[in-house]
Length: 98
Image (cartoon, rainbow, N blue to C red; front, side, top):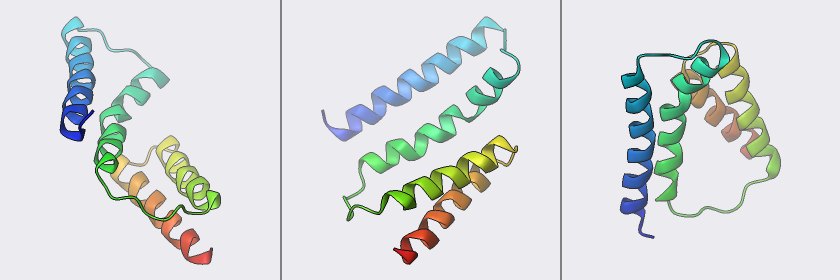
């Protein structure tokens, strides 16, 4: 499947489900609401990464450190942008160590 078509289909599925949820008028509460608040921002980088050229495979610790930093900050209530930038920064620092 070509990349632009895949991006279009994933965007339609993501935004379509959010639109349907908004039209029902009921918002979930608690953790579900917090998770749904971050879904589109979390999917956007994943869609962009599809088209980027392949790089050498990093050490598994680079991925683990970046994901842990992003997850911890997001769980503690940091904004999506701050969480993602911190995760990328931690992954960059760890990649320089290996």
